[in-house]
Length: 150
Image 1 (spheres, helix red, strand yellow):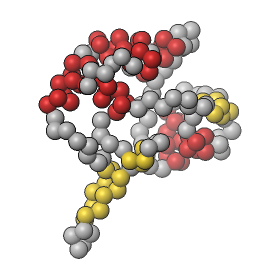
Image 2 (cartoon, one colour):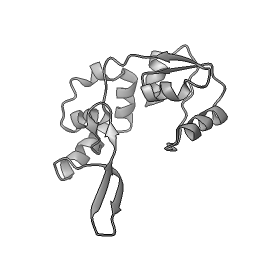
Image 3 (cartoon, rainbow, N blue to C red):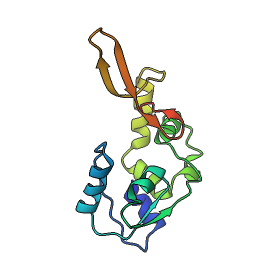
């Protein structure tokens, strides 16, 4: 989906997409990128954390202003609830074509209509204290705060 979107927008450029593990450690994450990806000169990002991590590398950092925040959860809910009239303004046509080719619309509608309704909190860590107290470590989700599954 990312490749399809990029190809539509930047069809004259050669683009590669890489999966990068989340190390939970800035130095390991940066080292992985610098070691395993092709050499690069600049970083374009709208993420302040990424800007901060790359600030010590000597690479040119080009901050991007993210004007519209598109949430995958919102897109999936729109598809599942048959509210797809706004999708052409939110997603490139190549992404819509890709979603149709993998039957994502039907699959999401079936999933949403067969599951129990209501939000549930997503957590990264579940711990119990020696006293039996439950501790949930919830992840933050930019910009709203708490991440919900989806």
